[in-house]
Length: 402
Image (cartoon, rainbow, N blue to C red; front, top):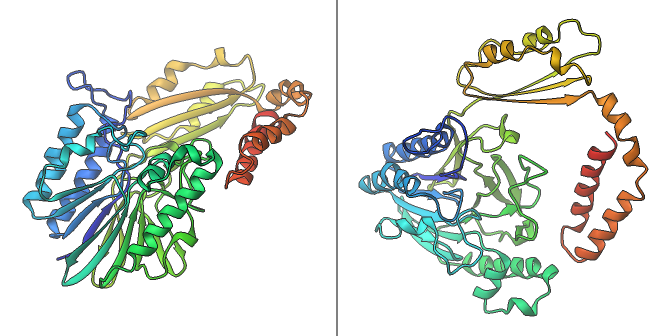
């Protein structure tokens, strides 16, 4: 078979304080991420795939501990090489240094003949299933690095225009290379695609000031565009071109707790994409509201906690009137949640009490006006200025009014 296996964000080496092995210092939760990468690699070996693509953020940081590089080398890179599967690795924002000249952990695999590391925009033609396929590869680059590589002086371009100029550089590169003589053209990229849903609006995968892909940047003659960076798997379309966001291999953030995780398989004969779901660690969020006058608040909480918590990550959020916390028997709750893989709890005051406390905040002079003034002064020409205003006002509303 000649399929192409596409893997989104992995974040190997991510730090968790959950069930940490005292010998290796590695969390069992970190191994959840690694194990799904291994599953994807094994699938590629089993079906005799032609190409295995890592769309970026292989590692959670530009340089991780040697043990994580060894995990990837031993369990993924070398088995794929032994099976004759080529590997493309794109640098993502987590494994691409802000100063481009610095090294990164993905460089460790550059010595393998079957592995290609991409840290700059590139165009590669591969013959797969008898078809010449042009891969236009767009690893993550910060605007300053893009401008530098394009021969432009970053200091000569105002801060609010750097992202716009960077978009034009990428668009021009795409337009040029999409004309490469080939039977099919696939874009591989690690950037936020405009309008993509993110897992956490307060701490999104995309950073302020980074380059954003827009539909107008996609050439109409592409057959397929595959994106990393955003952790939620989703599909879109731009100018008639299918846009597929692979998503993370495991649930990185609690905002992903209901999102299916997996990898993509592309049939080179017809450019059809299939999503292959992987097992994930279940994340269970339990919200309980205790009313004033409740004679047995512990029982109220226990009744809301399911019996089957085995190997699940559990977050218990209890809303209760002030002064009732000492009435809660923590030992009984601890006993019930003991089978869980990981347990965290949060205790909040009743919304009505918080509303009374925040009445004072509403009297503060022009909080929304202050926000408008700040954004106007700092981001007047930013391409996402209006989005910044909307998100800022939403956060203020949540903090001061709700």
